[in-house]
Image (cartoon, rainbow, N blue to C red):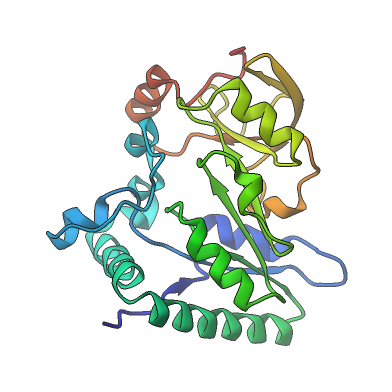
Length: 253
């Protein structure tokens, strides 16, 4: 089974990387893989496939699949087909993804750009990301993950940021910081165009803040910070997410 291209380099967050200078490079060319979040593939393809987001909870209602071009039915079908290929033809999937990432790296070299890769744009599959990072040590991989103990699933070229959710505990957040993993929080009361606070407190743990919407290159962030992200989606979805405890106001302790 072979679907259309596995990688995308055309996404709003990825595009912001183009103007970020890294070392002597003229920006960053980022590519990612957009699979179905949670159980979307099973619903779209009308057959049972494993979930891609085992820690999904309230975030399912505010998922980025409901924003921008991700909402289009054609995009949902493409995501579902890629997801099925991952679960049912894993070796072929990895081989194709490696070849496509290598093509992106060659293009980046021609443009004097740094190459970065986010394998889980909508999913949370560290096994896939680690397999790709191992095959492509020259490329910097990065992801967000809600899975606990993220420090156990990083590599020299695979950076993780822990995504705080309503399922997170103080132990999860403190453990991430203790192991050099930053924590991302989606906030409900900082809107587009408004400034993030300088510090943030969750579970009694206060740290400096990085505005995660400036760019998506989390491996460039200083260690020991909260990465705050504005909620993307409708007001109704934001209110639902806040009630569920996934999206948090900046003044919540």
